[in-house]
Image (cartoon, rainbow, N blue to C red; front, top):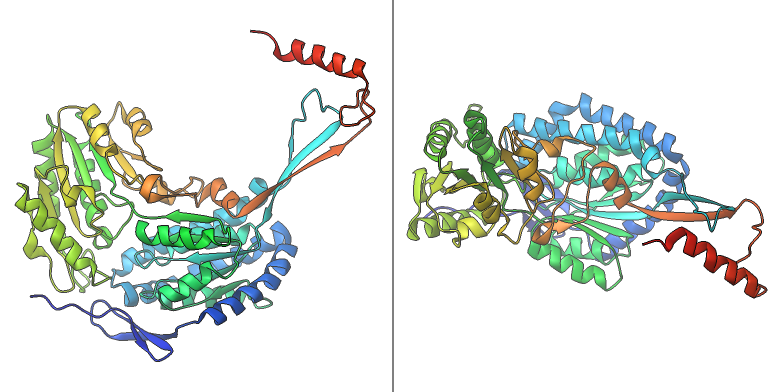
Length: 498
């Protein structure tokens, strides 16, 4: 039997945040009630009007200063992340650096993406000037995850702020300290109004935020919780953007750089303890290169180790309940004829899970069908890339994906049913701030990052302005029959050709 470390523990109207490596209390935070959440949202409404009034330039200046604070205090931020997640400082730094890049991009590009643009008015309405601009929604509620407590929520927060919204942020109960650190840093730069506020607690606090009357909810977490949020949000017609995990595949063609593909597989599967929604969980490799590829993966995986010391490549499983899921998936794979060429059931400890590489696992097994969210990976031989595409797409999820092929990378990427694909490099789309991030199917919908991410937190406003009186008036009861006849002839000339 393995010991199970406790989850964050309630203490009266507060709860303790615990280190997953030691169970040490690293912070104590309030459990905010529905009334307190509602009050935060009301404060945010007034703050949103002030923040919007700063304009794109004023908001960009504040966001750039916030980015500067995060950058200068990066070691401090990384330590808070390590304390609450157990991940190595280097991994905490990587996600924080990427988040800083996204803040910078959102601040710089908000005006260009959301500002007023001219549109063609067409021949029939040539006397009109047509414009569209994107206006803030008002108050956005962000419910963040624990696995990437800086990078993931800031992908919504930074873009919502750049679009002119106020934000009420509810971090995971496993990482409230990271959320508080980020919000406190922002308050130093924007002391005038509560533009970015923190609420902490458990599921009830998140539910209160969903039902608080915010103008949009951005959620990252499981598909099951995402469905509950959608159902609750439907009561108030609150729109949502949901990123809900994946079962991401990596494809290896005959002409792939096998060394690079093996390295990407090992890093994508095991980094952050495998607790990565866009990490590599399944690999489909052409049978002609499969044996060599597996050998390279095994060799690399043997040099990767979980632990709390400085030499460990990744840390503990952050959420204790996930240990039983990982163990169950490995057991099911082995019982159904799969083989562990690295690790196995014994890899699952009471806090740490060592790398496990599984081969010959049936496609209908739990290890292939369900999100494991641990440092495991399945590798399957395929006769060609058509079979690889078919199997990769045979999932309810559709978040990230990876292709290794010198000649056919772009072609194969276009055929994968996923929101994002990287070619010949692991997870590179996440670091490119101009690219939208999101999934299909049970991986959710809506997009953060890039122009799409900015528009996700804004509403389009269309304006038609009459520049001069048209010789033909269409929108009047005084319109004559001759006018209708002329319009009919005109539309036939314009659009009646076969």
